[in-house]
Image (cartoon, rainbow, N blue to C red; front, side, top):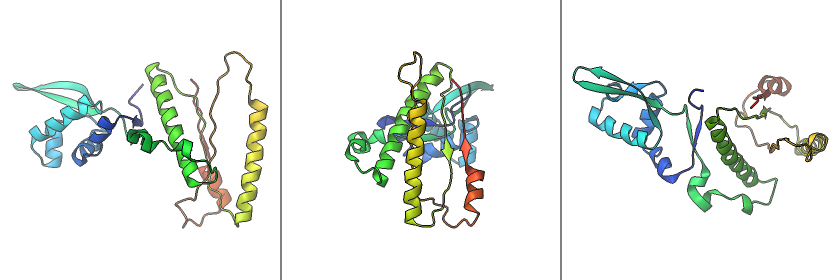
Length: 216
């Protein structure tokens, strides 16, 4: 299996590296293998300075060795980023980043964000364990845009969606079969940022609705 598309950073010390503009610039360029010399030319900076940052990134697990090339009397180390992108988990903030227990209003933006944070934390941990075992995580992702004509239509949609989900859960939930696997379902909706699009909502839903499955 190749390098992961996304790595979640959950340690404060590691997250600090992603706060350094120089190290972020290096990671962006190391999506493909590179060396201190090639990066120094690209950024017009001293190779020694680039080398220092690369060593620190390698210690923190953001950079890995690909190969060593001999050039004259020197050995050039070629490295690359260990993931295609990185995401800092809110748990880096400790208690300040975990607000789920304080959120009680299921119709608030805070509750949805808290649920998303919990999903990110749990899914990233599961994905890391699966990667170590060279397995894939069985997941399901659905996305769609819905343009409501009125608040009443939005409320009616929410009621029908809740009823449909409850019916499906009751139909497929099996707490007794040995070897069964439990999946956690989160359904949320929030205002789309693409408010200026004029495409037909039904067509947009058909175009953007996606379902991704992978079997472990």
